Length: 250
Ligand code: MN
Image 1: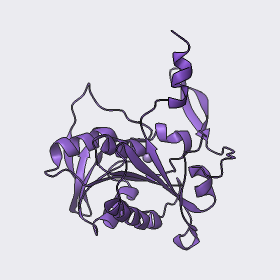
Image 2: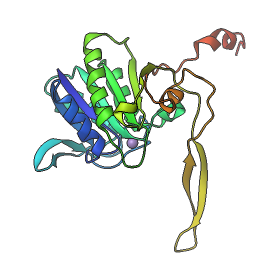
Image 3: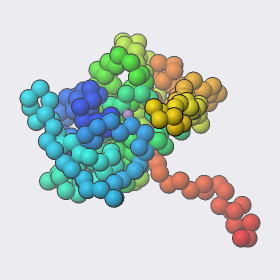
């Protein structure tokens, strides 16, 4: 199996190394990832600037290709140019921080996998629900498990899997649940500051502690100690509303 790995935390992040190590047992792994932190770039691609590609090393060994692009750029570039063979699987992660609810819209991690799905390849995004002292081992082991399932079964065209793993010891994880996307988002605010020349600037901050009454959501599965697996797609059409909108007779 040819496996393409990317992320949005950058090629030197700990999560992508854990993922690559786990998936190496399943096939030939190619890592193509941003050369710096690219979290929350969503599905951005780079048009006005060239894309630079450099070999990245870890512990003195070749690890993968570091690019100046976004996760979506990385997947496009890998599939269209860098890889000799088209991958059988694209995996993005393991992200530092959950990608549940509306956060997936901003997520570079999910967009790496979305790009894979748009290019017709079975794709998976994996995130760990913490920003501090991450232990990626359970999430890495589960990535290999779900990759095996994706090899055995078929995803519908345009559908990818978004996986979120609770940041608790592997022995405490209660299992995996298939979920839907929660309708919750970050509570954002802006810190207003002054630069050394007296100019005002703003810095976004926020927290993610929403109430969610939807018991089948990705957010509540992770909160309850389950690994959440959500099938997601990027046809954004609101089919339920089409007939009513037609009746507007615009
Ligand atoms: Mn990230």
